[in-house]
Length: 212
View 1 (cartoon, rainbow, N blue to C red):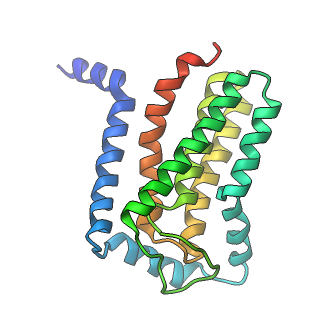
View 2 (cartoon, helix red, strand yellow; view 1 turned 60 degrees about the vertical axis):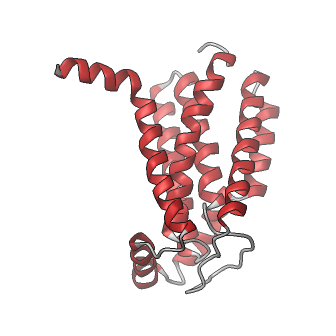
């Protein structure tokens, strides 16, 4: 019986991850829709305002957050399209960022959550949930992680790049909370939805990509 369960989980792991992430995202979205105060937002605000904010960290957070911005990611996607020899891979990177950006803007307009006002280090316009930087960077860099895992054979290079990109995704999310432009739940919601989206996107497109 145990072996059957292990085999089932192994075969369906990606769909289990999708389901868990989507359920948690929907729970957060429901709280946002009902304008409920979330414990994670209170804790996130207290941690940042009490322990993290400093003259040393602020310029670092401002620098890191740019890696999740629309301008940087758009340029990065175009550059990758131009430099990657196989245009199917390049097109999949472009379509990925277009789809996730449209989805993010659609959700923002539906839920219309105002941005936090407790403290604000930089100014941002638009709605707060889900965080665009977090959602788009998770989808963009997460997809790059998949491509690196699939196509790069050198294990040292592969895992070095995967580690760097994984850390970057997390730091982008933290930077949005630090700069006071998003609640913790905005960032978590963006990450969770993008993970669910990536499972579907990669499953849909991987047959169109070249073999390893």
